[in-house]
Length: 155
Image 1 (tube, helix red, strand yellow):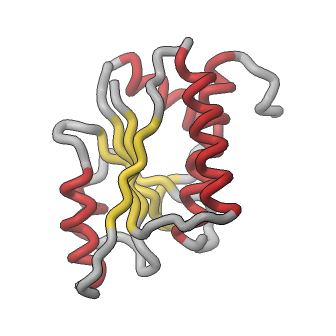
Image 2 (tube, rainbow, N blue to C red):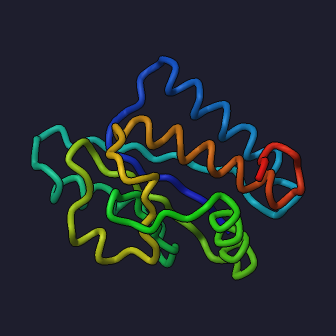
């Protein structure tokens, strides 16, 4: 199994980058004993200003062939953290690669959303795409702690 995050934009040094790195490091340590690999982050940038369709093309190239495609989108399902952990465990148990996709400031092109195996929303509010990385990284770590039986997640 392989887990990737494909995201539009480059996360510059700062608090968001530090938080993403911290949560993904925690996930790697916690997930190792659970059969979950470290997460690989792939950042893409449309330097020509082609909009969502150009970003979708770049993101598509970053998605590993055959991977389950999970897009972060405000119109998606709003799973609980335990539900998210269960879905992650299901992909692991199927030995299926997994790729989370985060669009740019304007969101994801409809053609990319249509290909998704799962669309996830982090709530009814719209979040800056750079913060979505932090929130997804934290939820991945939280999922690993739930699967490990750690007290990090409190219900």
